Structure formats: C-alpha cells, structure tokens
Figure 1 (cartoon, rainbow, N blue to C red):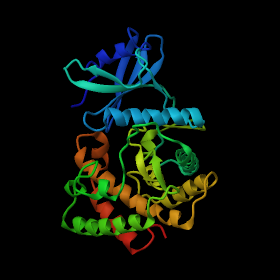
Figure 2: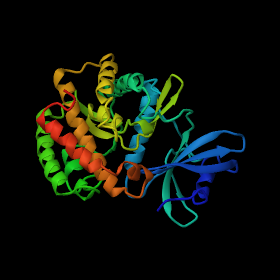
Figure 3: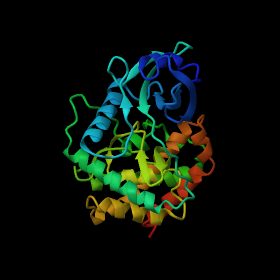
Figure 4: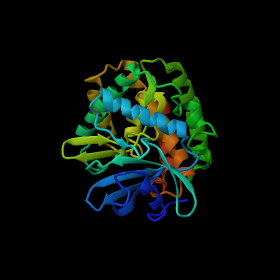
Length: 326
C-alpha cells in the first residue's frame, strides 16, 4: 500500500536531524520503495527511503549499507550517504499512522536532477563506465562482513517463473508470438551465461540499477544513488542496467562505446567481456519485463508498459541472429 506524507510522520522522531524540526515532506519516487524528500524548518533537506515490505530483509538492507560504508571509506565515488538514527543504527523501524510496520533509511540530500533520455548522454555514459569499473575493482579486493547477504541476479532468478521480480510470462503484451520468441531467448541466454561463467574477474557484487533514474547531475558532477537492488551478478550487467527502458533507442551504440571507453580507462575488458554486453542487455530487458508485470501500479511501469513486450521480442530476434548493434 502506498504511504502518504502523514503516514510517515512517526518516523521523524527516530533521527535527531528531523525530530521536531520537519517543515515539509513529500513523495518524490515510488518504484520498489517510496522515497520522500524531508525539509526541516532550518531549510536543510534529507531523503527518507521507506522500504517496501517483503522485498529486502533486514539482513540484506544492512548488507547494502555495509557496502555503501565501505565504498565511502575506500573510494571517492559520489554516492548516497545514509545517516544514523538516535540509536546509532542506519536502518530504523517505525509504525505508520495506519498501523503498518515499515523500515526506513535517511540519506543526506544530494543536489541534482535526473538526466533525460533525449539529452546528449555520451559524456555521462563515459562517467558511468568509470564509476562501474571503480566499484568492480573495489569489490574484487573487499571482504564483506560476516553475514553479508544480497540477492543474486542470474538466469534463474530473472528468467524462471519464480524470478525475483516476478514472471515475465505474465507481463502485459506477452501474447503467443512474443512468448514463443522469448522462450527461445531464455534458452539461448541461459546457455551463453553458463558458458561465460562466474569467475571473479567478471562476476561479483554490483550496483545492478545504474539507470538514469538513479543518477543526479549537478553541472559536471554526477552522483549515483539507490543501491537497493545491488547484488551478485556479472560486472557487464551494470552497462545493461544503465540503458534500462531505453534499449531500442538509436543512440545506444554511441552510449555503449562511451561506457566501454570509460570503463577500460580504469579496468581492462577483454573481447569476450565486451561481446557479452548484448547478452546482459537482454537479461536486463527480461528482468524489466517481469518487473513491469509485477509492479503495474507504479507510474514507472505504466510509463513503459505499452509496447515493451513486443519491443523485447524484436530485440531478442536481433540478438539471436547476431550482435544487436553490429
């Protein structure tokens, strides 16, 4: 159930920055979770992420926050900064005014705007490639704390009927033709991913959702937010996530080249890694198709729902016939 601004008022007392100081609160995003902007009487803004029930566990949320802390300590990547509550814990529990138990994390406000798909995104994607490579290098050297637990994004967890984001077969627009094409795609994808393997040079903890909606651009400065979907997957998937919902646009080849350029300025990719980018795009596309079906009540799903299944089948046929972009 969607929460209102008044529903979350009991949460304000959990953080000393907010207790007795909130002037305004309003919803700014509702996809997997709900994110509210909180403004204090002193004019200081914050972002409160209220977690959707039964998506992430307490252990997995705390694991995400542990990785954020490690990235902040070990790198200078511009990422979200969670703030502890009055008890010193980053993850807080509260009961809404309607009596529903929820979890919340308060983040320091980051200025900026979400870039649009019709802008010149080539410089931005070069930056995203750099960010992805630096995160992957960090993960390859980082030892997670005991009990660390995040979801796994692989062929089974995305393509199977009990996938993490639901069953793509139930998504709007999956008619007989689309189903036949995408069934063949699933077989081809599973085989290619199995052949590629999960060696430590290509698979590990990733952001997994570096799409335009999770970027804040402020002049030349680009910040990366929302690690809620971070999990274990192929490193190349971070490119696929970056073009989420826009995989069929004409500028994708240029964005792909820019991302590779940025990435390889920090960390090498071999020919096989680069060749697998198309497979990752299709894997992500299938994840999003399932997500649209299981989150049809959200504005984001409704925005992209029309034609997404048909577009996925068309892209799948190109993929199975050869490289998508030549």
